Image (cartoon, rainbow, N blue to C red; front, side, top):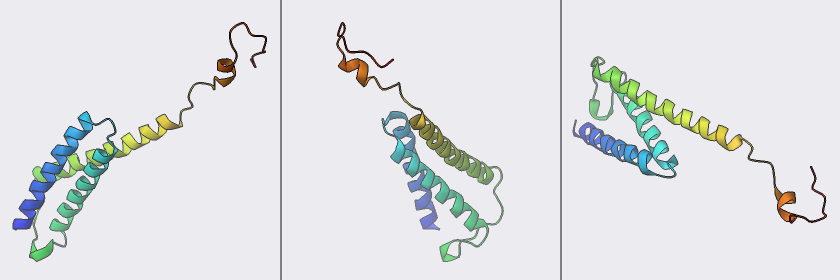
Length: 117
């Protein structure tokens, strides 16, 4: 089916852009999210094509070992890496920063104002 070939080409191109963005972007959330959505879409399409079929009567028998299971594994690893990245990012933002230094910064050295510690 022509549309399946187009989807493979588009998915590959998008994932290449995602890989470059993950290496170069200072804020990679959009790249992670795009890659996870594309990976999940590929997993769902693969599973549908082997179970109920895709539009225009496309049905693929078998799992094309080793390529089918390997593609599922790699796409699943990407999604897990994204979820791990989200978890690490949430943990880092939950860690409290250094104690508030406002009282010390407002008092000049040698002043008679008593510091609160």
